[in-house]
Image (cartoon, rainbow, N blue to C red):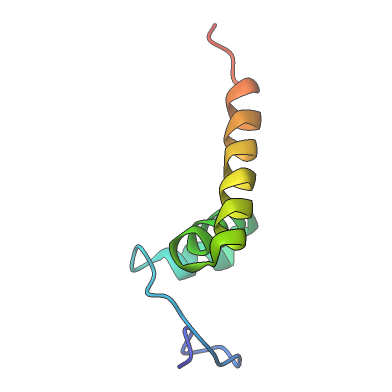
Length: 70
């Protein structure tokens, strides 16, 4: 199965959460990274899920602390 009809890599693929997500991930590396982590939570093993959740929490905490209320 090839997840990208224009790609040359074959292998296991998850159905995207949103139809246009693969296109957005190609345009924005941060979107690609975040949804790769989410896919690890969706379908990874115990270790992969734990590591992906840790990384997502770290990124959320960093982003939350960089915003100001005023």
